[in-house]
Image (cartoon, one colour):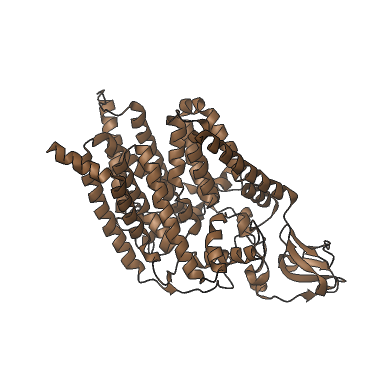
Length: 550
């Protein structure tokens, strides 16, 4: 009998069988993207516009893309300075090759979904040191309700791209703390790549993950002190690789008065977007809905979902059992090392904290004002974004409990089958509801695709629909927003004196011949130097990697 069990376990752990299971997870998770249409999503119009604008900039040989010249009816926009776009070069190139915009977007969803499955399995299987548990964690993470909502209901490109890298960040951090037999580059490389992926996808996700990693480092301060060298090397590599984005981002954030950089959400407004208990323990994540303040009505797309609720129950029961044993002064017997049990408790604690932060019950009103701490916490915009942290923490905690408690390989396979069945049912319900959404067939982006977050403070959006040059007695107003680094050049390529005029548009002297001027976005020298730093850092790391491989 044991021989048969061993054969079954070995069969399931075979790399080809594992590959087939991962392929099935990928297909189930991205099925709605395999269509000749795209479902209407909350942020879809904005991201389709970003893709098209990146394509237009690439055609004009503007690399890296910093400026969306044709946004806001030709007035220009600078969302690329604040929103990593390197991964969107792929669908932008497809669009430039003649592919309809919606189809290029669907292909991006499919490629991102495939990458998420591979990265998740790589990270979880190494974190848990077991292939079956790696697949189990991948099912829970990839088919979690919040990720599916980001993909198809919210069309939150930055967030669902960033969620591909979150498992790698966690495993990379774990590797630095626990796996010290590697060379220094191999020890830090997963973490460096994971954080770099976050930075280039979604800066808000980077901020949230960063805060929780810092919290972990503080809770494990003794271990942190012991690995301070690889942590500092990781930080140096991350800053070097991403200098081409971080330097323009930080300079622009600190120098330009834009709606996003000056806006601090009131505590009550932020609190009103938190999740209710009915959502935190909502069994079905619905494939429909939108955000409504101070209400859970029509917000089923933010329900946590049964997969993660199962993880929460397992994690909390484990902590309760450990506490009861500790109170009764009983020895906590387990074949797992003490440090692994501490790891599970910390992950459960951080998952519970993320749950609280994502809810309407967190006292967000304490972050009123314009202090650094207030800005740091309120830039998240919507508390339910912390679900991404909730998901990763509870998935790791729950599957780690399974690893500690269930030692029999066949029983682990049974758990995988049961969870996969639940995941298939919950995803099928989500997809069924999603199928009633509006289909989009956008060949090109809408002319009003840009949002208002990165407009100069005080801009009247309605006035931007006018695209004519306005000739005044003392100045000429060009239909171009006066962002930093947007210059007006004469026929000889020399800068013409300009300033912010009416409605934050560029004003130039009234005696300038507008028939012979060019408006161009000029990168500062420091930005070009930051690009060189990134290139040099990447080449340096590749050279070390090749040398170590030899």
